[in-house]
Length: 250
Ligand code: ADP
Ligand code: MG
Image 1 (tube, helix red, strand yellow):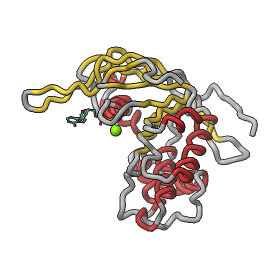
Image 2: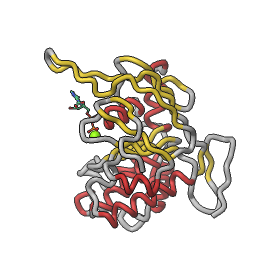
Image 3: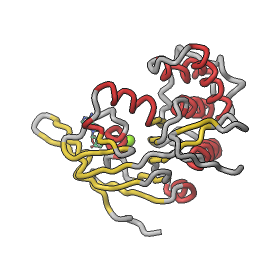
Image 4: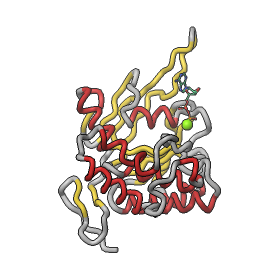
């Protein structure tokens, strides 16, 4: 497939129902997040500075408890730093108004998690349509877009199933469809294959790779170094909340 790049932030390609976009860059400066637990202070993210270029696919590695999810939450605008700053697509999240931050979370970033985080009582189509309800998109258009997003991840035949009626791989495809429905320029993935067998995990990774080829920047947390090596163009390592040099050179 020939990829067309556009200066516009996003547009639909005519041949396939796939949006190509520009990808967002990330700049973190002295980024920190501490949690206070009684007398103790946990420095989950400890004075981290790094840059990710637009369109990069970066893997974030580190032992459990090293601060990977805390860092992703800061970049997603779900949490605020105790010190330092993070800017995405040139905009400092701390300087955004409440409305701008809401729009940022809805439209600039998409997130997928190890545990899928789908709403159990809703169908797959409703789950994917949900993020657009807050974007004042007309209902018909929401449904069309949700359907297109699900078709894109190969789930066009499961629209009216509930999450419990799907396999783990199908649930993760659904949560990818939900993350992509507003055409984010950055996809944050927190151990997206952690609950999947290796074959299904590979299929999810192929999808994320495809999304990256269409322009979206990817920051993916994983425990699995071989997976990271196969897909990511660069690694970032965390240890005790700090950025460290590659602890095990390839
Ligand atoms: P990882 O995703 O790499 O496993 P986390 O970012 O979840 O690591 O956690 C980093 C550290 O911060 C851990 O020591 C964890 O216990 C602590 N932590 C995470 N979230 C909270 C919280 N809400 N309150 C207190 N401590 C937390
Ligand atoms: Mg985590």
